[in-house]
Length: 417
Image (cartoon, rainbow, N blue to C red; front, side, top):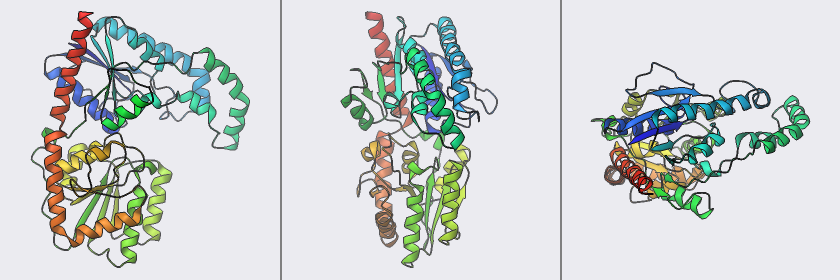
């Protein structure tokens, strides 16, 4: 089977986070199983190329929010060229590889017109891997021009140029209408939500992502330390992840005089203004002795850090498709206390595989932290149940087996037509 992966980011890259890692694991696995794999991705690379298969880093994100240039200038000066480039690169790489599957992963920032062309290739099956809600996401330039500017100068420029931009967008056929005929969703929540709104086709399936047990190696949570409760949060540090809710819960514990022995480690990067607001809260609430914030670290180092904690806090506000961060923590034997938003509720079940609380309800989160502090046996019981559940049903190996089988079935169906 010949497979062309298309994704906005691909390692080594500082962007893309968990979505990028899933794409890498799938590409590596299919290559290792004897399939022909190539990757078409953006120009971003932060480190040496080290894959045994071709990685074409020729696509330019559009708009490119990493470039530090106004989206106004990007649209009027660069967008037509970037879209032509995307089409050319698809035709060049696909023309050489003759892929039986065009596998679209992280699509945000890439040309929708390129995806439409991929859907229309007669000798390929186009498949989308949905670990987000791509079919719901608006065209980024349409969204940009409909939103107010952040500064007075930006608001003036957008007000003057918006009629011209909207006329040009209409002439370009935006938003590009995509069929999404073949999709793989990471959770039943994602599949149901998109299917009910009619945004994906009839061939939609659910294949959950999972913990890479091989990458975790022999790591496992160390035993609890008497008198201490070590909490951790890992991943993107941004408002929708609810990091502020965790700090508010610790404030409540401090108000009750129950914070002694409780620590929280926050690992990850995010918007500078939000990070500063968290640091301000830590100072103003006198939480510096209990809370430490660290930038993102390499994956193996992060796994070792995870294993040195007792509880993963997962206070996400938005409808998470399915968090690999949570899955890895459970696989390492940590108890997860989190919000059952989106696909998370398919794994995180209150009193069965972990503990839950409503989004942004810091008081309830504080209660759950106190509950396990006062009942250490409950923490161990729930952590063990969560670990067994994840290692049985949510592993990377299982995900890759299912993806391979599904793609082979689609290719066989294409050949039979």
